[in-house]
Image 1 (tube, rainbow, N blue to C red):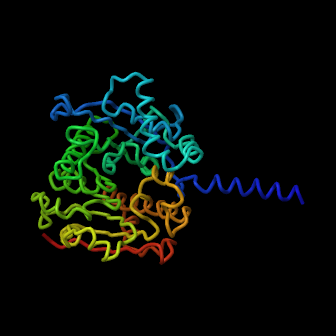
Image 2: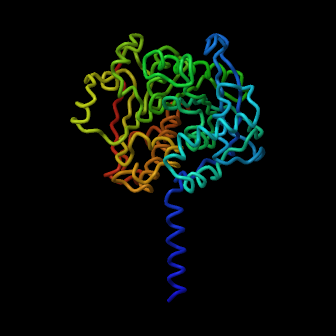
Image 3: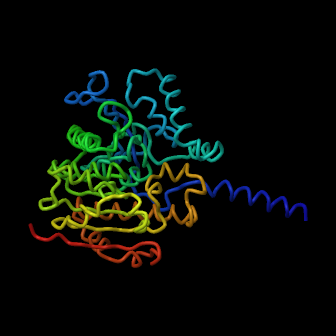
Length: 382
């Protein structure tokens, strides 16, 4: 009996440890993934102290089976050198450790945090690039977030034949990004800078460019597309274009009468009218008024706003998940990643099977009816 109790206790402990562990719940593509980090500046824009704007750049790409293996902590370690490329390894490590402690470990606790940081990832540092030509994706992170905020999504897309590029969400003159029009336009300018940088990459096909924006990145990518005709598709992961109608109204150049970039908007569980009233926001909606672009709105009911980042899923404490089990939310994140790939395949690779996938109801793809709904609105003629 004592032996059985011991086994049960060990099994229960193992389940408790596994419960807060995040793994992408869908299989990656067939291509190995490499990661390169480029410390570059945009000389056309100034930052604090009049220096050229730093744009630490992460590039995920289809690779050969080479390069150094990585752990999840390697992504967050890059935060130590985001703005100051001259820091020593020790200085960068100390700055990154302080950031990780304040932003993530303060919620997760040391044990969950250690497991998250030690988790293996798919990318291998500086792996040799695979041959071929690949569409380019820019990932725009949430407000003030690091470039490596959503590495599981970026790795997954690279494993399916995309080059994915990201830089941190950094304000116009300081590290913190303000939630105003100047901040959103600064982020949009970073997106266009990264598209121009992609032209220097030998395997990048910059005639096929998409931009994925999460939260604040999901208003910046719309502003970027309104000005930059190189952008052919947009994915918004609960993007702020929905939550800041006053900023969209102030950006007069982002006029829905002319906006024609196809968009997939993946929405979190809807908030009720009482919550909307408390926010005091106007009822105008760029998404509703956007008539001249193919538009897909996928609503993921298990997901709240934080859950669209695999980093936050790794470190979130149990109370953050509210009424849905952690495993259910992670599963919904996997569906979101799959839909993102299918939409991009449809519009950047002209994949007819992907277009059919997007047109079908989520339940036809094995997603429970209670978990997701899809609204499809084809573009009206200009």
